[in-house]
Image (cartoon, rainbow, N blue to C red; front, side, top):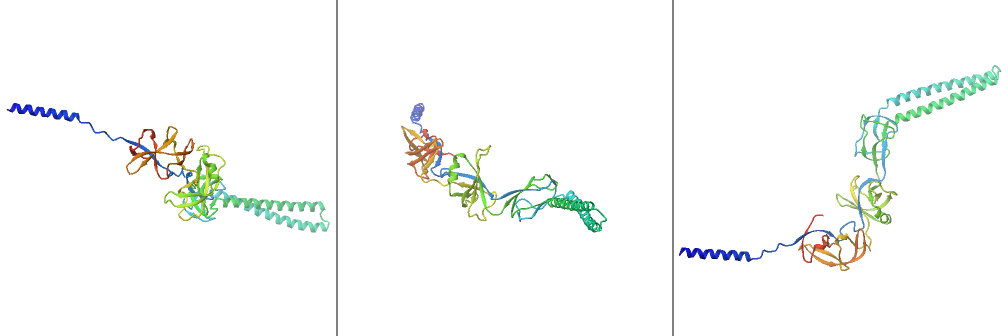
Length: 356
């Protein structure tokens, strides 16, 4: 009896195994990772934008007009200064001694001039009495003129020495902010070596670099938009200066955009973005990798954000170039489209959005 039950149990187990083997495995869902882009969401598509730095309209690199050793620095970077305020000082011992020597020479020349004037007055009286000849009188008069010239020369030399002694102190040439200073005590500088940078109060600008393919549009743009990075505050702007030659390293053109209606929130050194206005006829721009060309017609894959799936949609291309495609129909601004892997998708396919 027990042997019969064992046979029945063995037979049931075999049937279960065969039944399990006959079941089909559930298919793994096909989820494609893709990169996407919001149509019309890129600032470059809206006309182009370029990052830059807020700068002062007038910036001065300050330097001592005489060589020497820095002995004292009065200000630090970031300090507000007034015109004529001392910033740093050189050791002026040599210039002080030279000035003293030139002043002594001036005093000697003045004394000599006084003596020559007195001698000429006596010579004039002696000439009237015929005690000296006309030639002697003329020589005395020439000696007086030479004494006057020597006094004038000594005065000029004393003035130069006085100026050099004064140049040992570096003063601010305008009201503004010291953005840089390298005049540390002990530093020996040459005449004209920049040791400080002064950003003058007043107008503010954004310094940017413009690629050559955007030069014409930058020149023709009447209104620009400046956006601060840290708080997204916007200001109107206008192009003030555009370099005539490209930077040899970056092959871009330096430009200065004047900030209109600047306020206290605009600080030197802040990061800002200058955006060009979009043309009304510009249309939506997409990279070439987003366009699917099938049978002479053009399509894009539009992403459904709720279901994370894609649907193919026909679009009309107005212009095609090496940088992308300009659409004239079939897509609305703000719709998300696939920009990579368009040949591997199908309608309704599930996708996974990759980080840009």
